[in-house]
Length: 435
Image 1 (cartoon, rainbow, N blue to C red):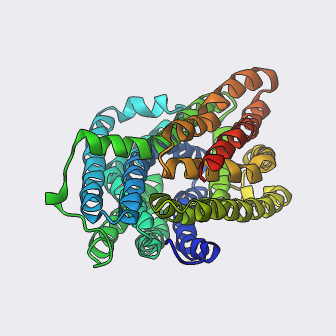
Image 2: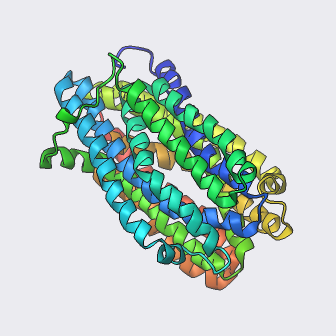
């Protein structure tokens, strides 16, 4: 981590991380693809439940990124005992918290689906889908925490094995449960539940028991104010980012619901496609994070800066190519998920608008990862909130009354460009301080 050529090291760590991110995005894409054969309201139901899944991911990323950042710095400083304690504390704390949250949501899921933006026609499908997602949520959080912890130890390939196993299983189980067992939308949720549980146990039993990795042991569970402070410092940007995404999706669903189920379905599909396109960039950034953490802990700031600029250049170039291709083939991309004229028309406009800001998200995300990994929680949190909160909500409130449905679709790329403008001085200030 501190001696190998930086560019080659980032690429070697990024490849499995890219695979992991693509696989994570693939989970929802597979559900959306197969459910698309059932109907527009069914596709919209997945979009309605997505904010809940974003909250589940937020809890997983909070404890995973928070403990993982600390683990990488502790290992870089040769303090393995603290790394052991932080790993077990981060995992068990996340699973316990998610279990409590899931229990509360299960009791109130009939009300919760309307809060998330369901219409009367979407509600029955959303309730069924949500039940099994909540049942799987502690395992989803656990898998996310272990995935992040293994990455920050430099074991991204091990994390990839666990995530790929679950994704492949999901691909086979989705059509089996949806069509073979005639379970419809419920079948997609059951397939996701089983797949996520499989990923969790593979990561736990295979990843953490290897000699070179930090083990997870109940006796190492050491909750303390100091450790939770470190988890908070390293994980709060991820928590804010995912929480803002959840709230933004809820607001968008409510606004789009005024234009029918086709509008919610189209926005759901566009979001899936953009998340998938961003996955490669996120994976490359995650390849940079352990290099950043280790070299920051070792005070090798020149290697850290070199790695940051390399990661940004590659991510920006890749997203620029993706943006052009998606803009050109937008109707065909939307039609893959739902062959509905209204959905294709609305989705094509939304996807092409999103492509405008897609390459610039590389700077936002890489800057956020840099600041989060080295413990600059204040700047990282501000940047995490800006994209899905500080700029998006005002954009939605101003553009929707003025332009209607297109205004809703314009809000996200405008918010992204404003976040990009904010990220430039924040990141440059941090980079200049690393000397």
